[in-house]
Image (cartoon, rainbow, N blue to C red; front, side, top):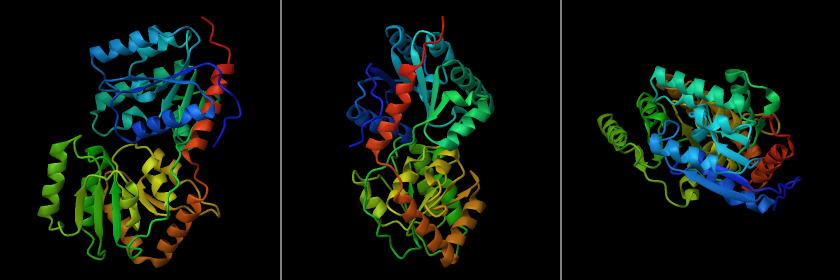
Amino acid sequence: MFTSNVRVTEPVVFVLPGDTEDTSGEYDRRMCQNLPATGLPLLELPIAGEWPMPGPLSRSRLARSLAALPDDTIVLIDGTVACGVPEIVVPHARRLRLAVLVHRPLADDPALDPAQAAELDACERETLRLTGMIVATGPWLARQLIDRHDLDPTRVYVATPGTDAAPLATGADGVSRLLCLAPMTARHGQDVLIRALSTIDELAFKCVFAGATHHDPAYVDELRWTVERLGLASRISLIQPPDDLDLVYDGADLLVLPARGGTSGLVVAEALARGIPVVATDTAGAHDALGTAPGGGVPGLLVPPNNPSALAAALLRWSLDAELRHSLRTSALARSSVLEEWDVAAGRLTDVLSRLQAAPRQPA
C-alpha cells in the first residue's frame, strides 16, 4: 500500500462529470477508489451534463455547487467540466484552491466543427491561465498544454494513471491476433482501422474490436455494414467488452488504437502491463503511456490520425518484420516492469494536491 509523503489534512472536493464512460472517466473512478487510502479525505461531486458544452441546467448545477463551497476549499475539477465554462469556474479561483485535471485538450475532439474547436480552445486557455494549478495526466500532455496555452510551467503538474497487476498475455501466434479496445465512436476511429486492414493482403489477421456500442449506434451499424461489404466478416469481430478484460487482452498479439483525436493512454498502459506491443495514433496519451522502456526501447509504433494508409503501412511492417516484432515485444515486457499500480498513482496525485494545500491563496 502506497502512502503519500505529505498528508492532506483538509477535505478535497473532486468535481467530475456525472456520466462519463470513456477512459478519462475510468481515470477519475480509479483515483476516487484509491485516493482515500493515501490519507486524503475526499468528497466526490459528480455533475451530470453534456460536458464540455453543457446545457443551462448543468451550468446552473455547477455554479451552485462551487458557490456553496467554503472559502479555501481544495477543489480538484475535471477539465472536461471546467475548461469549457471559464465564466463559471474562474470567478472562484481567488476564493477556492482550484486544481484542474486535464486528460486531453478539449479542441482535439474530431467531432467538433472548426468554430466549436476554436471556441473551446479559447475557453480552455482562459480557465487554465486563471486557476491555481493544472494537473496533466502525463508529461507529454503537460508540455503540450504549456506550449498550446502559454502556461507558466511551475503551475503544471503531472499525475499519470496507474495500471492493475495483470498476467502477461498469451497471444496467438505472435503476429496475427489484433485487438482494438475502445468505445465504438467516430473519435476512436474503428472505421480507419477497418479501411487499413482491407488493403493488407499480406497480413493473415483476425481482429477483435471490443468496446461499448451504445454511444453512437448509427456509427456501429456503419462499421458492421463496412465489414460485410469488404468481405471481412470472418476476420473482424465487433463485441462488447466482457467484465473481465483479461480475457480480451490475453489473446492479443498487438493492440491497435486508431483514434482520430486525443485520447487517454489508459488502454495503452493496460496492454503494456500485459506485455502487448502497440500501434496507435500519435497523441499525447499514447506518447505518455508508451514512454521509454528500460534499456531505451519504445514498445510501439505511432501513426498520424485519420490516415488508413499510414496505419496499414505500420501493420504491414509489424507483419513482415520479425526483428521489429521482437524489439517491440521485448520493450513492452520491459515497460510493463516499471508501470505503477493505481495505489502508487493515487499517492502521487495526493502529493501534488498537498502543494495546493500549502500554497498561499491568491490575493483577492
